[in-house]
Length: 312
Length: 236
Ligand SMILES: Nc1ncnc2c1ncn2[C@@H]1O[C@H](COP(=O)(O)OP(=O)(O)OP(=O)(O)O)[C@@H](O)[C@H]1O
Ligand SMILES: [Mg+2]
Image (cartoon, rainbow over all chains, first blue to last red; front, top):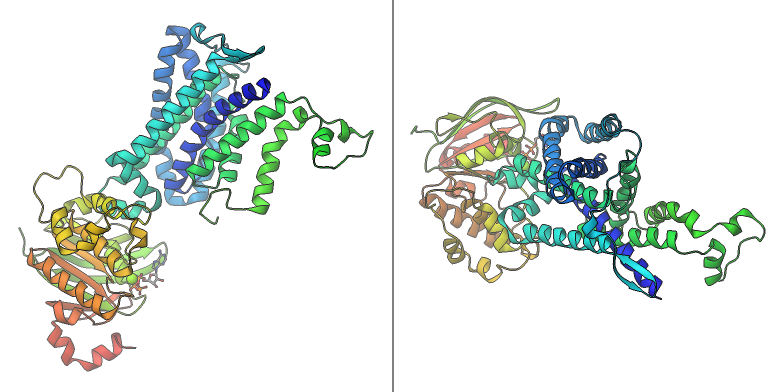
């Protein structure tokens, strides 16, 4: 039971981190109508920037500066790149972000090497926050949760309580109308892109040392984030939130539960042919596939996702 | 200050390769209500979008003496053109009050012609329903909301695309009265309509459009007198 509580907390910490990524992706998608394939690259940049800054002046300055730098890179990309590609249509934009993701993936090892970098959790945040009968919950996971929740509360506050938030909300559905009312929508688009990528950067700062900071981190997280926005429903923040927690739990539990596929199926009264490889498959082995299975199932059963409104 | 609020000369407009406006000349003078009439698909909405910088256009479009063709939509709006597109384009998930707030332009320095209170006095429904999502309003209420949303940004000229479409005759009459009220405060109006309906009663001048060109311009009396033109370009 204690083990379940700890795993649940771990999965929420991971789910919230995923939501920091998927919320930015969702907002950018709503406003521009395009999925940003390079979104997870900004997550990777956040981790590497934070690592670099931490080697000079410690973790805390990196925590502050890296997301801002990543947001700055995001704004440059939007203003000098994406904006000009847009008039050639969505396919061109999609290819642009795809190319960008590859560029980042190739550039990062040139600067920091192919192997992972020793980006570590700061000493102040090492150790266990509490433990339940031997199962420990690390301080850093608690810190991740607090950061994510704080950030998301701030995001919610800005969107619902400020004038710029109101303009953004309106622009998500009818950017042309908002601009015809005299609002500088091109600038708002750039700021939103910057904000979304800064959030991804922050996720990288706090996720990079909790997990591993390496050149393939963008690709591995990127696919998961796509699964989340598809499962949650394209353009739905609520859906992205639900799906983030769901996938976070799915991935966390599947790697920690020491059971086989057969044991799970027994619960619903099914059995696999004995003495086959399939009967010996464990959930840990199946873990990486589960999110994609979920996505395929959702696409078949409910193509617009858990909470999506848009028919694609 | 020139004697022209809005002046189009030789305006062509395109959606990609499709050439929709073929050299439009027209003008709106200060304080006028001018109507632009024509059948479905002749290019009236495209003309409004050309003025607002929302479609690729060539030629000359001057607003209060300044060339605006090629400028960004938000800049054109800030110069003082209000645009109420067809289908109203309200923000359905936002409240009535939030819709009105979005009409206010950032950094406005002078007191405009209209305040929120004016709007509430003219349309008490907008106050009563301030906190309801705009999407649940009736068609007529939505039309009033989108007009008020535009006016609160204090434009000198408003372009209104088919405000009476789908409204009951009584509500159509209300819209007509409101537009005259708007004009009294010194706002010029370019009213786009498909049928004569309110246009004959409230306009100083009218233009008739057919397939991307202006086929008639004159006063309501001129148009009333000209059966042949009306039959050819308006009535089905
Ligand atoms: N986004 C677009 N892309 C391509 N063609 C368009 C587009 N919008 C309009 N058109 C075409 O341009 C022509 C003029 O359209 P426009 O909307 O200006 O007509 P309209 O006079 O406003 O008529 P109505 O409002 O009754 O449809 C039509 O033939 C229409 O099919
Ligand atoms: Mg039209």
